[in-house]
Amino acid sequence: MSFQIHSLPAEDFADMFALSDAELAEKNACRQIVQSKPGTPCRVSMADAEVGEIVILLNYEHQPARSPYKATHAIFVREAAPQAQLAVGEVPEVLRSRVISLRLFDSNHMMIDADVLQGEGLADAITAAFEKDQVSYAHLHNAKPGCFAATVTRAK
Picture 1: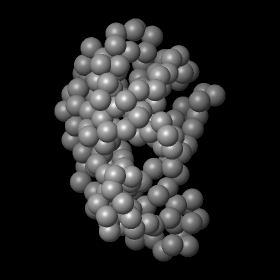
Picture 2 (picture 1 turned 90 degrees about the vertical axis):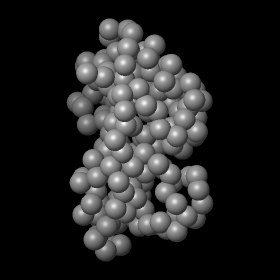
Picture 3 (picture 1 turned 180 degrees about the vertical axis):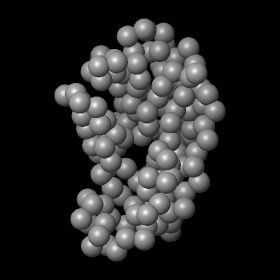
């Protein structure tokens, strides 16, 4: 079963870089300068930010569904980040190089299974998960800090 990993849309965050630090704080966000690589994974470009780059750290609602699993968590977005255009079945390095929490949801937005695995095993795990009809979509999180990484759907 083919799958598609989705990056977040750049346009959703473009205006944030023009905000003052006080305005960012009002939105539960802050501007940071990247101090080390890897460690600051951008959810738009699906790549680690470079040392010295400006990023916005913000609270993002990655599970907006009316469900007990409705959730938000911190994410990073790079300034002027190019939108990732991932191919069907592609797992970007930013995911392959980390320990990932794979969370599977049904059509009612209820978590029906989960696993923690090394990112290089992610393609096989997602493929196997989507062989189960009850799995509607998946969320990926960086397992150690818990940050939301991406949504995964069946490829069309």
